[in-house]
Length: 378
Image (spheres, rainbow, N blue to C red):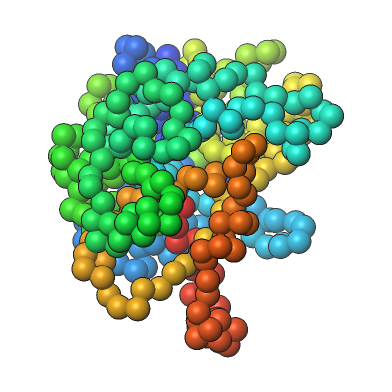
């Protein structure tokens, strides 16, 4: 093991992780004039035509790894992989930037039971912070088109595009069924106001943006670096040091050289993600100082969604261009006075017999494509 070095520079704040949480925290701190060091175990994501290649998506990208990571127990055991890159897994997200609804903060009797659990704040408490986050990300949208659109103090930073290609057909068909389609709020620079404009390709979901027009965390970090923030990629934080009740430093390992270094600051922000943060707390023994020590690293639910695919009988005009624009929220949540999703799916979703036969054939290739497809949208 290489000797442990200590960086002589003392920062105001060290932010561990460059994903959504770390980037947003750093944005506030840097603009407040503080000297910030951001540590990221992954590398920077190169941008260019290679990002459009099929092997650049999700788990196929070089920024996804299962090496030396987390073993999963339970009904579906195996190894859980993680994305490691500047900007975090949100580099590969689909750009949809919803606010939580007012009802999301209200206790659900089916979930809470007699526990009495509830959120410590309401949507109204968070509304100003949603607005600030939308400004940082440059979200484009149209307010008050969603039947459950929560109250807003102001408009979106940028207007949404009109529905085009397949999105226009889905919009028209949804309206004919009595539904109320809405424009998805998207963290995408369509105008070029923040840099290079979106080229309207079809690779937002699951891909890093080839032209950096998708406003994921990696898109806002360069401006912070120009304002003085220090970003160290390929730097793995392996231990948090403490003396008494205060942190005194972070031990890091350079992924390329193996050199171990200690960095110190007045304050620390742990934003390594839902897996990385508890991992680091446990590795550092900090969980022993918490009243909830037995619960650190437990009860995690990762991104969970159901996906339905539909096939058009022929190629639609504009199908190769950007058309992730339409959302249908009429059946969101199934709260009082609203039909549940089951009624919606039974009434208008049908699977053609030919499709049913094909899906049941179950070849190895089809099963592989199915697994890939389940992870291709989020």
